[in-house]
Image (cartoon, rainbow, N blue to C red; front, side, top):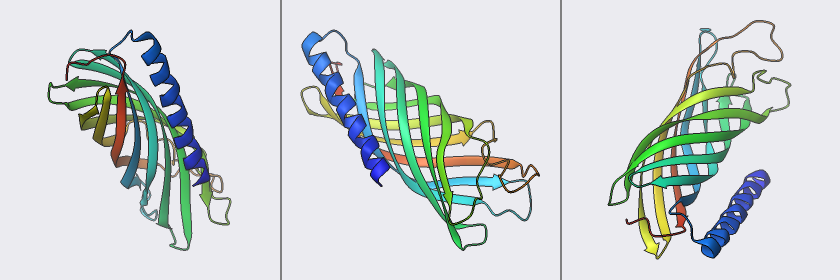
Length: 209
């Protein structure tokens, strides 16, 4: 929880500095979003029959800078995730994991604030804890594809309320394929996650929405 609060504080600080810079120069229509998210489902399936699925849930925080090209936006962001599987394998140990995700996406934005898009993220495993054991995944990063849909609406001039949903699918399936206490490659079959975000957005100049 302390790490999550630290990440949120860093994102808020980044947002404040960016908004101040924009207010001073007022040179772009670009939009910054800062969000908190809930991950109700993050599932990892394996090729091995005796390996149960990992069923994570947890929380996320992200910041995203959007290059505004009219109805077409390019988003570049960074996300932190903290997830827990309370019934990992034998049901006796919680498996917690923390990830850092650099992200890029493209969005089509309507005049009413609805947007839909797709993109990629690198999901980097920065920390993991399997109870009192040394049971840890060896691989650290995977490439994910994401589909996003969201809506933002003005709160006041230059400030927006934003809601977003995201579906992600693992494209490389390496992260949980090998473990520290096993010489065998377990083999990931697939992995996907679903996340819901709520946040605020700030702009330098009028976006026309």
